[in-house]
View 1 (cartoon, rainbow, N blue to C red):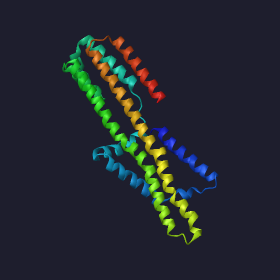
View 2: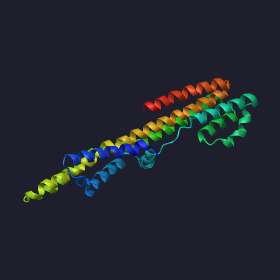
View 3: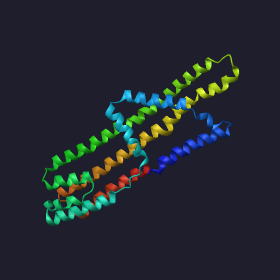
View 4: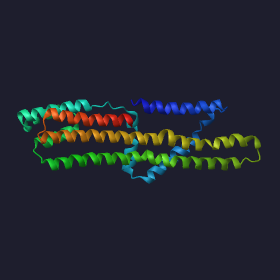
Length: 255
């Protein structure tokens, strides 16, 4: 589990509720089923209209990725590629065919398969890069489901507030109900702005960052395998990949 996603949402919502309580508010005032239905239903309905069906469904499925922490396997991948480089240098590239069964990573297995099949380096590079960037672009489009939701939900929240105020207007003859009615009406705005800035947009950013990390990981694999094909010394290859991985790790820490 990606604890930063879970803790971040809980911490943000908790601080808002505590601040609301300190100011004399009642947190239970924010529990409005009607407001939640208007904001969530209206937001995802608008997103469904804005994006093609396959992108919308893919985006919803990707949401869980924001809460799943994948352990970095760069060190293991580098060690495996360097091992393959040693085998290729010692026994020839065709000897790598016997290693295919012990490769768990599908992308690495495909890249090594190109090597074993004697695919031209330029064609192999083009094919691998096409897969890398196509998968990345597909993921970015799916992440836009939450980016779009973050854009729509504040407006839908305002729409809910207006509908609530219209309902309040029906009871102008009863002043005792006006205060609570107006407060309830504005809960929709709270939901819309809160969901946009605490859930939808953060999830979109987290997904885009994870997609970027996965893209960089596959670029490292492609460069490593193509370096084997070019006959690069295993020791030099290890230094090259370690330097590349170090830059990616620093970028990941900064992100």
